[in-house]
Amino acid sequence: MGIYAVTGGSGSIGKKTIELLKKRGHEVINIDIYHSDIEADLSIPEGRQKALDELASMCPDGIDGLICSAGVSGSCGNPEMIVSLNFFGTIAMVNGAYDLLLKKRGTCVIVTSNVISQYKVRMDLVDLLNNSSEDEYRICKLISRMDKTDLSTGTALYVASKYALTRWMRRRSASYAANGVRINAVAPGNIHTAMTATRSMNEKMALNALPIPTKYGKETLMESIEIAYAIVFLASSEACGINGIVMFVDGGTDALLNAEKVY
Image 1 (cartoon, rainbow, N blue to C red):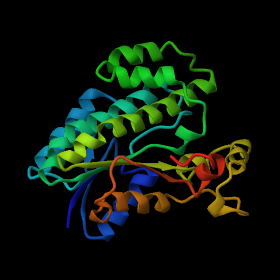
Image 2 (cartoon, rainbow, N blue to C red; image 1 turned 180 degrees about the vertical axis):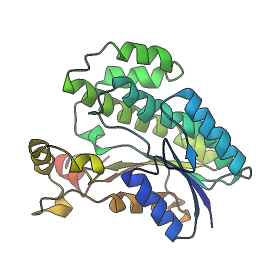
Image 3 (cartoon, rainbow, N blue to C red; image 1 turned 90 degrees about the vertical axis):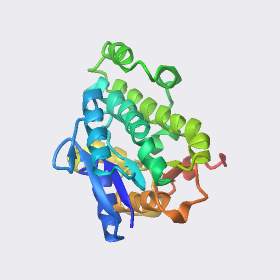
C-alpha cells in the first residue's frame, strides 16, 4: 500500500479523501493548519517550509501521492489569503514535494473548481500569477489595494487563483510525466460543506439555481465523497494513462452550460 499526503485534510473534501484512502489500505498524512498530522499554515512561506520539512522527515523514501485540497473561498474576506493559499500555497507544496514524488514515481492531484469555466475570468490577474509566480510578496501587496468591501473582488480573485493554478498544472504536466510523476486536477461543483450549511436563504437559493444534472429535481448540492472518489481514482495506478487533465466533477453542470465545447 502507498503513502499519501493530503493538504487541507481537515476540510470537507480533504477529510473524505483521507477516509477513502485509508479504507483502501493506504497510509495518509494530513497537512492542515489545525487538528492534523503536520500542523502548518500553508498561506505563508514559513508554514509551507515547515510542512515540507516534516513531510520529508516522515517519508525519507518518498511518497506515492500528494493531494492538494487546501484553500479558501472568495467570500473569506481576505483577498491576500485567497491568492496566497489557493495559488502560491499549492504550487509551493507541489514543487517542494516533487522530489519525494519522484522517488516513488508518485502522482499529484490538485483541487481547483468548476468556476474556471463558468465565470468571466480576469485574465490580467491570471497572467500576473502565472508570469510572476516567484514574486508572491509583490503580488500580495498589489492585491491588498483592492476593495475588500466589494464582494466581486473576492469572487474575481478566487476564480483567477483557480484558473491560474489549473494553467500552472497543465504547463508542467508533460515534463512531470516524462520524469515519472503524473499530475492532474479535479474541478468540483457546488458541494455540501460547513461553509455552505451556514449560508443565508438567498445564497442557498442562488446555489440551487445553478443546475446539477445528476441532482435534477432535488434541492441539494453534491456530497464531498463524490469528489473524493474522483481524486482517489486519479491518484491511483488505475489512472496510469491520465496526465494533465482537468476532471470536472460537478454532476454535469459544466457540460450543460458549455455543451458546444468539446475540449
